[in-house]
Length: 132
Image 1 (cartoon, rainbow, N blue to C red):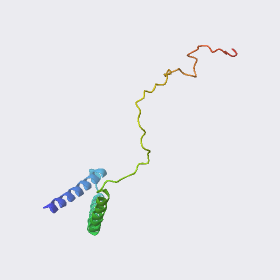
Image 2: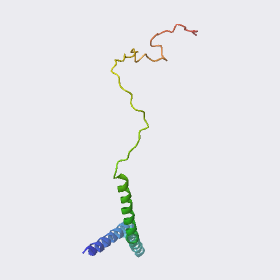
Image 3: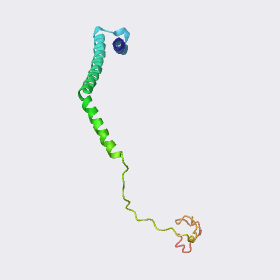
Image 4: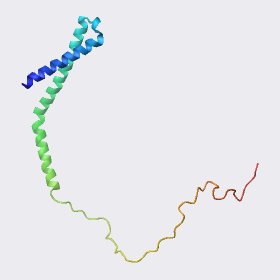
């Protein structure tokens, strides 16, 4: 049942590709060479897709068991590593005792003193220099 759907799907794709190529040429100017080119392009596409699927299937059959064994071996090593917590000695010194003393806050300075490159605070500087 699935094979018949696959064959129907492949034939549908081939017919659509042939129709697209012939439409690009123009239905009024179709020659036998245009039809042969469209069919060849469509069948080449189907052949390349089939070759890729066959290569994937053969690769799965060839390397499937070794990859499964590698995954199971890797999983056992990970289980051995992460079964117990890892103990680590801290490099930091022991924390100092916290005292309950009150610490005076530093005196507050104004946060914005203005732009130091402008004369906004003093419109005319004391040393005016030479006026032209």
